[in-house]
Image (cartoon, rainbow, N blue to C red; front, side):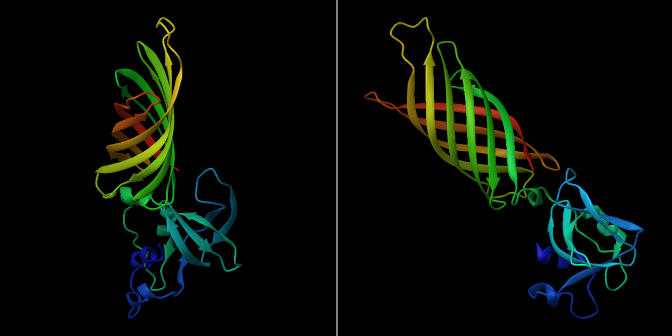
Length: 246
């Protein structure tokens, strides 16, 4: 992220470009009456300080819509990315930050989603919660409830999601996971008993960027059910939903 800040500021006469591979301090000067400084990167967090006109602030790192800064009093907080246009770089120009791409929203964030689909002919509703370690890799927990004509089922799984091309507008992803599946046969079935089995999953899908932190997510999943009977089972599921990053 430090490198992104360097690239965003106009080059000084001779060494802004070479600073790309150093730990040199990046500073800008406030060019408005004041800028609000937030306790953390998010509109829900409180404003705990303001920096006034002509005050020099140090840029530490960026996180999508936010820039982490340090004031001359060594207070550390966050300002809105859009407020950078109210500052001046050391050569007196407004810093030119590049537009955010969809991939910029993916790194180091939690992800929550809800989806509707089909689980072997049953109507399925699912929710997922994940954490992205990088733009390409995330760990995800998913829970689902499926309602069918002859039985209902629920599953809870955890797994890894790999997204090789996060900058694409329609960005494919692959996933593997494992968990538990509970099946509740209809009470009208003779000698029907509730079952609980282990499952393994392999999935293929895509993210479609809608706006900001909001994505449409589609997915097809193959569930391999390790039953206690002589034969195991395979079930296919498809779903479409919305995911938000925060």
